[in-house]
Amino acid sequence: MEARPAQEIWETALGELQLQVTRPNYRTWLEKTTGLSFTDSRFVVGVPNTFVAEYLARNQHSLIEKTLIGLTHPGVEVHFQVNSARATTAGNSNLPGGNAKYTFDNFVVSESNRLAYAAARSVAEKPGAGYNPLFIYGGVGLGKSHLMHAIYNLAQAENIKALYVSAEQFTNEFVSAIQSRSTGEFRAKYRFVDMLLIDDIQFISGKEQTEESFFHTFNELHDANRQIVLASDRPPKSLPNMGDRLCSRFEWGLVADIQPPNFDTRLAILKTKAEQQKVEVALDVLEFIAQRIQQNIRELEGSLNRAVAYAKLFGAILTPELAARAVPDITPGSNKTTLSPEQVMKIVAERFQLAPADLTGRKRDRATALARQVAMYLLKEATNCSLAQIGLEFGNRDHATVIHACRKIASDINNDPHLRRKVLDIQQGLRRQPGAR
Ligand code: ADP
Ligand code: MG
Image (tube, rainbow, N blue to C red):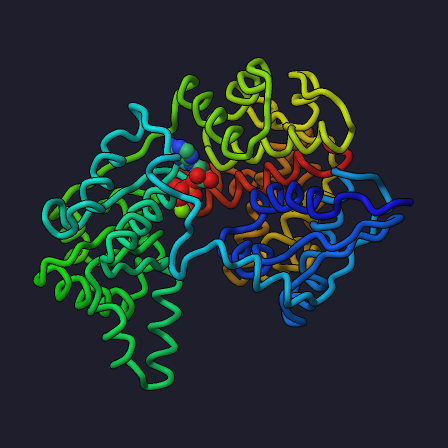
């Protein structure tokens, strides 16, 4: 068989994998990979180093293989190969600390994000002169990071010394600075900038030492009229365990939210993305996708890519019918899967980095107990299993235990957006399994 367009298939696969693993996980392990070759049933993925190759082979082999099978044919085997030359050139489009592809020009403005957009523009143009800090919050995939990068890119273009980091990176650097006794350098890095952008600030809440260090950074920058921009998945007051001092500082400037976009906006975004990628997609197809995907713009974009890739792979014209096959239905109500309880439990265990046997076993540490409860909840929500049957699947637990687990998770996902995201991700993953409906 002739070599297939490996990179094209891989890009589509990455789009899906991005929805199935956590963001840090994606960034660390998948972002810098490439599709090297696809001949017969052998798909070779290029990775930057052996460390990544080992990690992926050990932990994400089956997820990746399943994803590729869904896009190609059964029996595909995935191999990881170190390919450092490609990995370094792939990074060139990104400015250090930022992502050049996110700008104000390609951000679609609508009612749902107008305030955040206007505020972002104004701090980018006149840092330190207006809202300080600017605090942007909103659900996953609604454009917070896009705006952060847009600010960063504009500031850079105007020679403003800006620094963009995720709160996770900030935390990691802080921790290693303490370990290597180089807190002076750490301090200098963050306190001598004109503009500091920290993404996903919710990540530091509850991490006392990091919060403390950020508190001082914040004060010094603010006192010196340097611009601070923060993005979060929820408003300052709802950050659990965030110290009051920081919480109130977050509200000193402007707090701007981003809401899920309405249909017209989703359609406009799809048009922009298709144009950017220089692909022509019929209006009825874009409308179909805008109708189907309502909550998350990253997913909206991923669905467009997937539909386009599908049409290419099959050499077919992209119609709404083909798009319907390419884009899984993730609207609420269609949340039953045809997967077996063991398959569901296996997927849950994988996502919690446990073995399936841990779920059915007797371990009672917090992580295992949570994974077990989530698995019970998902079996109830996503399969047709009865409570008694679910109890049996989990090593003969009684039906009261199952009810308790289901109620607890139902209430926890209401209150804890992280858990909600994780459970939603798993649910989506379930629907994407080969054999799932
Ligand atoms: P968040 O940080 O809120 O989770 P991102 O900023 O990463 O979300 O956005 C996810 C994807 O959606 C990105 O590819 C981004 O370009 C796109 N996106 C989000 N909002 C818009 C918008 N208003 N116009 C164009 N693209 C958008
Ligand atoms: Mg983000």
